[in-house]
Image (cartoon, rainbow, N blue to C red; front, top):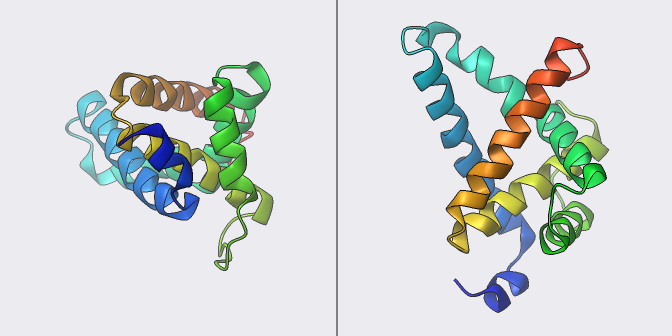
Amino acid sequence: MRSEELNRMNTTSLAYLGDAVFEVIIREKIVCDKPNDAGRAHHTAVRYVSAGGQAAAARIMLASGFLTEEEAALLKRARNHRSMSRPQHADPKEYKLATGFEALLGYLYLKDERDRLREIAAEAVRIVDAASRTHTVK
């Protein structure tokens, strides 16, 4: 899909897709890292795919300059998009930031920028793992 079309797309739709894309990336990582630990796979995945984990990753990527200007702008546009849904188990600000992160992943997926998508997902995993070691991610 062309950038112009993607820039007009509803960020909620991008986040919907990005959520699924990130879930698959995380599940693949878990299965490849510990193929015989399926019983704990869901528990392991939650650290990464939760609003808290995604928001922490997005916050650090924005602050560190890891994202390009285009990526940061899309994430912020999605974060600021007015949504009718309310988070059940997350702080509303974290939820909005996580939604922005998911929208960015959906955007990159549709733009067919799979290398950059995987780079951002890997950085998110690195950030969440580092935060988990210091117990700062829910």
